[in-house]
Image (tube, rainbow, N blue to C red; front, top):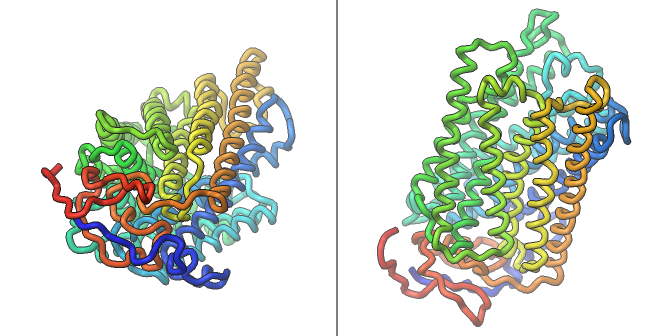
Length: 565
């Protein structure tokens, strides 16, 4: 493989950050990198807003009885926390933000297949976010982020219409992004990049895009029917008019369980890159990991009923959904075992991205193992709608998906910004997030096992004195953990912002990666590459050597692989 020498150094006027300056040039840009950065800023802003609501919820629960909010305010706080985190943060965080930036460069392409559609998708996301804010200004909603009927159609709040409209529009943004990624991967792969030469992150994004295109229309139709039912009262979900509220749950979870994999599959793709690059070892079981992404996408459409074991559906359907739910663990376990095998005898660098990758494996394993009692019919009856479900959900969604996203952001931060952050500060932040997360959510497993229901404003009335005291201990620990985790996130934001102004200039390849994005300058040129890069094995680290002059890694000239991996 030949070395690609950029025609201009990093920070030349031609890179994507300085190609054309000004707010208008960014607002009207068709550059996938700038669109990815704008998505990232929007997601991080939404994360801050959703995190504030989370801290309010945890502060309210630190003591029995009313602490800082009324019951009605509490319901609105946890509803907005859930809706913002799911629809504005976790779902778009990796595919729309990091995926938009990285996918074309990893593919060796100049941009996505439909740049104008890409920009349109971003503005649809912005419009959805604005409608969600209008919902807060109109009094908020208190239905929970799932908008379950019949309460959502009976609640006297206009916020339900605003949020349902926001979700409907956000769905179109997700669909358009998925279509763009599918066409880009099919049509813009360079010569020599076969399906089994693509980085595993692209496999994960492709499987995610398929879910986005096939599952998201169901959510759009569901929230549209909810709005029609609320405004016109025609009896789709309202039992007083002959409707079926359980039908709403079937529609909602037929989308929302595949949506779990919209959140987690790209995170798994990021972890495949983190583990391989920072272990400096060829990924173990490439094809198994690639096909497991496709298998997870397929299984995701078949397990929605495990959310409804207590809804009155037939015992046969419960048993079938339980069995299929256990089957999902197989492709997920394949990934974990292959990541561990990749690290075996690897030259592991315990830098910040790798610490986030290791955190993902630990937390995702706990999230997966705690899903077993929830997929088992007998134990789910006891744990259903308790804090055990809250803890499990956050271990899989926030602790896995969001931590992988932050790890990926650190991994590609030098490429995105052209600046290096402080490794010492990064390691402190990664350890702080890991400890704060587990300190926050592990006590909630104990709460759920003791029978503490989720969504309860007060845990004093209706419970024995001994049980109330136990609930208080675990809620107190969980709330302290949330404060610690918030400090770790602010610490992380601080050193990343500091790096933009004071960080050292980043070399083209600071980590020793072998995929195509490490062949262009940091930050990339406007069209990503000065010339078409040669395609090789993106996990062959024998082609990489240290360049002392550049203080980074480089690709060996005239490298010939010794043997096929």
